[in-house]
Amino acid sequence: MSDRRIRILLAKPGLDGHDRGARVLARCFRDAGFEVIYTGCHQTPEQIASAAVQEDVDVVGLSCLSGAHKYLFPQVAKLLQDEGAGDIMVIGGGIIPDQDMQALYEAGLKAIFTPGATLDSLVEWINTNVKPRA
Image 1 (cartoon, rainbow, N blue to C red):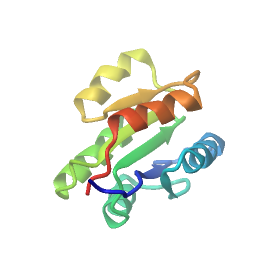
Image 2 (cartoon, rainbow, N blue to C red):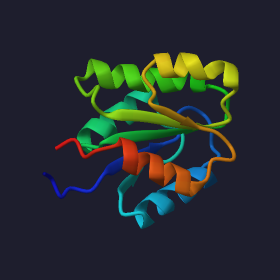
Image 3 (tube, one colour):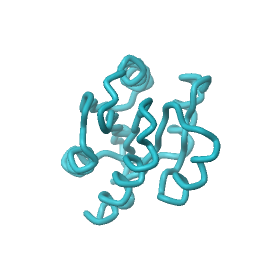
């Protein structure tokens, strides 16, 4: 069994420049014992998928408050799959309407967190559902 810590890449895809929440998550995840890579704002799905593979992460956390999640989140999951890295889990958060949830899950996202989700619930979900890839 590996002693490797869970590695999380946090990213803000698209033109959404509101990254306070992502920065709070990065600190929370670091404090919870995870290794965290934060790519910053204005990342393309291609940049995010490439960074996820290069950094050998276990999970990609996407944050979107602009409404472009219906395109950006599935695109990241597809690119990871296309690169042979479909075992990297993709989760998302932000302003996500209920009617968009099913399509995001069908596109490969494993969890979606919306406003009101607690930091503790995110850490617990990751500890329960994510295992280091090897």
